[in-house]
Length: 483
Ligand code: SAH
Image (tube, rainbow, N blue to C red):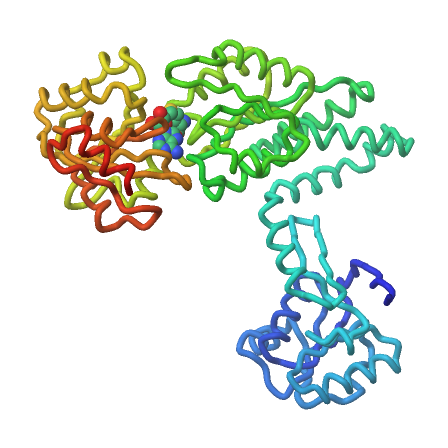
């Protein structure tokens, strides 16, 4: 087994580094060197336009010509970035003789140092190396880390850098200091930085420094939109929150696929509610959130779709606010947007609909209080979040208020999920069609001219199902399940 590389971060500010080559690869290396404050000296017969510009501006030095050993005088490092193997080898040999570290781009064999793949957040840098064996693997991991770490990490490092002396003075003992940092990193300071409240973060750090060590800290609740089911529709912020959670309180609507993305040792608690059987009362959900937050836990309250669209997210935040529990909100892709996209129905369209309304018709009460006049207006799309129960009333009221019985609809069942079904028809036959195809919750009703486009624009799963007009229940039923 070969020995491992020794990782190091070099301070190249004001130090000369030789770059042999003037092409696109050399340009990238020179750019990185400039970023680190180094003084690049390029040796090459010609330069890319950008390199030439930097040379003209005096930001880099340029020696015109082909490689000569003299180019390695008075430099700290050398990078060979030519496409001529013989030149690269000559540079490497000459560097070796002078005990200079040399990197030959894409040639681990000839290199005495490697340039890692980098994730950078301010002064926080994460370097990844495969020892030159598989640069693609390093780059792949780099991309994964890029999605994992948001920009606030850079701010955190800067803040802690500014307070470094104070922190050391306050906790001179190493073990104590480590515990302080562990608490700090799990606490309010990183959250406030994520929330772009840098002054509050600074104040919170000062406060933590003035407290007794290990004073209990309160947890937080992050209200996270889990989207409609397809885990690919989670946001990066949702993923990050789920990665850090101690406790996840999730609705029944949240798909198993999404839950599988959460940190493995997070405690998962289903607080499922269905339209009929309220299995967990809203007050109990509030109590659970408060209990875990007070125990110092990072709680994720995971809701289907978006937490602020028919999700009672507002109520939950009001409770948290009243009890002084800090919170964050991560929006999610709401069912209307997902179901529309996954069934090929543009919710607005210049020819058909200039407005879209999100409506809920979950219970009898909501059906009674809707503004039917407004809902029956033409040239708009309705996205109706509902149990499949109220369809009859829905159709009757809309038609009574003037919406044409021939307006097409689409019922999207299990939108964005593997089992997605799209059932189409016209308003006149809405409840019968839903029954005939045995549409079940969760399903979203989309009503409006735009839904006709599902027949041409569908791209996900099976083509939309259509019942023949006025089909008898029995006939349509055979149609649907036979497919
Ligand atoms: N906050 C959620 C909505 C909660 S209300 C959101 O933003 O999506 C629950 C209703 O949402 C369901 O009755 C159904 O009408 C709709 N819904 C949620 N997920 C759905 C899905 N994957 N497919 C179809 N409808 C869905």
